[in-house]
Image (cartoon, rainbow, N blue to C red; front, side, top):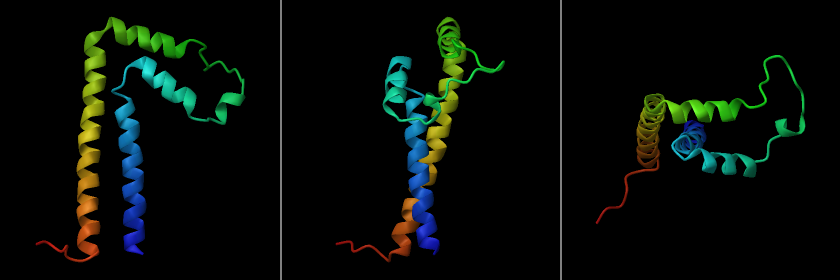
Length: 105
């Protein structure tokens, strides 16, 4: 049971790693990836007072105008990537030890 839970956690961490990696891509690439992923929420055209029609463009503009803000956000994403990668490596090593000692020549 622990082995299955470890595999599930490992898969979840790898998916999170991919998500964190997309934060470091250029905005055009991020939009292209987002358009290729099916979303159920895209079909709804609800409008509320909290909805802003050009929010993503305004965020991009602010990040272009303020280099240090973009640098700081990229540093946070990079830190999360490193922490997540360390967790993946530890889980992978744990799974290898659970499966038994490896056959080394």
